[in-house]
Image 1 (tube, rainbow, N blue to C red):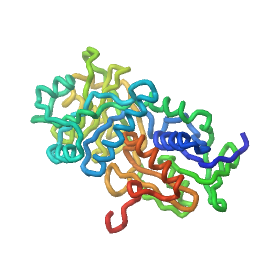
Image 2 (tube, rainbow, N blue to C red):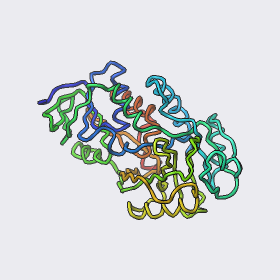
Image 3 (cartoon, rainbow, N blue to C red):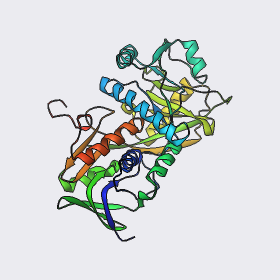
Image 4 (cartoon, rainbow, N blue to C red):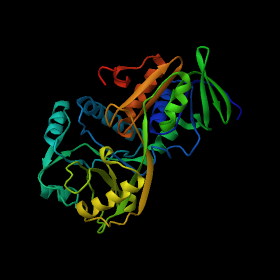
Length: 352
């Protein structure tokens, strides 16, 4: 292949880029999506993600509530469940505040005592006291989701590295390993590479990048039970974690919450220690390790934003998988309109 043209070019075929490309294709836009590696092997890699409505900010709770409907629509279109109904147990010092935000947004939830926590998650040694159950939370199936999005994007995926993006009159030019591509508009969803590609265009994206590792542990006594996801911010067992079931491995994936992350070696050591103390129903020797990049914007741990200059829109953030149906549509709308909506706009310096 030696270049080509498209109405819109999307750089990056992770969950964000694919969701946006799919939404553009559904709208009848001539779109191509560029990815140099195996699609979905970057920050979207892994077997499972945790979908949760529990957030510290009311706007994120509302967005998650809206995104849940998008996941249901994706599942119906794919003909299989992409997001489970295991529920998410949350324990933390702000659990009552989190429950109030869920109630305000109309999200189904209830309190689970220690006995019910053990019923919902038999591998758990509860940290003490009640936990908040996010009833409609659950485990997002990564591979089936990426596979479904791939089928919807279809032949619009181009396996090539994007070396540079340039403004070109009223459009944009992509310098790629598959030649030069001309497009009316471009969307950068390239994960940790987005700031690098956006900087020559005059966009300064304040993305901090660190290495993180997520470990999967085998259940000591697999019984085919449905296991709830688990978020622990109590610190009782020595770390704050997020975790969820990996059914195909009879396992449970555990990672440190953003605020606790150190580096790949420190993360792994602390996760194993946490499992020994808090999840005695798991074999503490991991059966799988998944290193990945964490890309954080400075405003808060779940921040995301889009920037526009000329014909190019650049998008970056953290914990994007759970909001993917919503973000994909919003990004597609931003590209088509040439205007970033408020939900994607970075905060003003005063607000930040």
